[in-house]
Image (cartoon, rainbow, N blue to C red; front, side, top):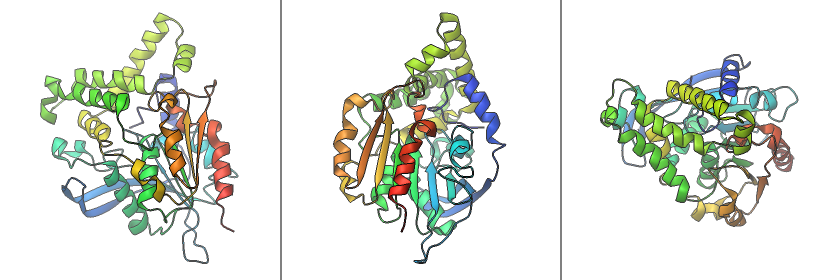
Length: 359
C-alpha cells in the first residue's frame, strides 16, 4: 500500500490511517487505458494505465455540462488512498459534509508513476518515459473528459504535487472548471532549497552502487535511506515532532519506525521519477490566464513552501479572482501535511463553493 511520503511522518498516524483506507465506503475503482500517449519529452507509451477511484454520480445541468464533478489530486509518491482516510474523506465526503458524495461526483486519480497507474516499477525501470507535471495533468484531463465523459468540473483541488497540478489545470484548461483550490503549493518554478532537496533525493539514490542504473534486483537501501532523510525534513513539523518525541529516546525510536515504514513502501526508480517530474513546472508566466475563482492555502510551518519567500503574495496578484490564505502555526497544523486536514482549512473550501455556486 502506497501512501504520500510528504504527508505521513508519524508512525502511529501512518498505521491508523492506512488501516482505515480499505474500509472507506462507497468507492468504485477502475483503470483507464490511454492509447499511444505522447509525452512532453517526445517519448510515448502504446498504453498508459491510469488508475482512479470515484464516489457519487455525475449530474448534468440544463446547459448540458456536468455540474457536480470534483477532481482531487494527491501529493508526490502518494495515491488516491491519501484521501480515503477519516481525517480527509471522513471529514468531507459524508452526508451533509462539504463534498457530500451523494451530491458531488468525486474523482480521485492516481497520477502517472503513482499508485496503481503506469510506473517505472512496472518493468521499464529507467526506460519509462520521463514524465512532467504537464504530462500528468494532460493524462488526468483525458481520463476525466474522454474516459469518464465529464465535460466540466465543479472544482479542481489538490495537495502538494496535486496543488501544483491544480495551478497547471487552471491555466491549461481555464474554462473547464468553476473553482480551484491548490493546497500546499506555490505558483512558480521550483528552485532554491526546494529544487536542491529534490536533487539530493535523486542523487542519493543514483549514487548508490546498488541502484545499478535502475536495474536492481533488490531496493538500494543506502540510496533510499538518503532519500528518506530528505523527505522527512521536507515534511517535518518542528512543533508536532517535538510534541510526539520530546526526548532523545523517543525521537530516535520515531525516526527508526518512520524509516522502516518508508523503506517498505518505496521503489527507488519511482521516487526518482516522481521528484524529477516537477523540473519544468512554472505557472508564473501564465497566471493571468486563470479565469475561475481560486483560493490558495498554505501553512506557516510548511518547510516545502516557506512563507518568508513571498512567492505566493506576488503570484496571487496576477490571478484575477485569486485569494491567498496563510494558515498560522497552531496545535492543529502539521507542516506540509496540513494540506490533508480539512479541519484546519475547510471553512475556506465552504466559502469557495458558496462563492461559485451556479444560480
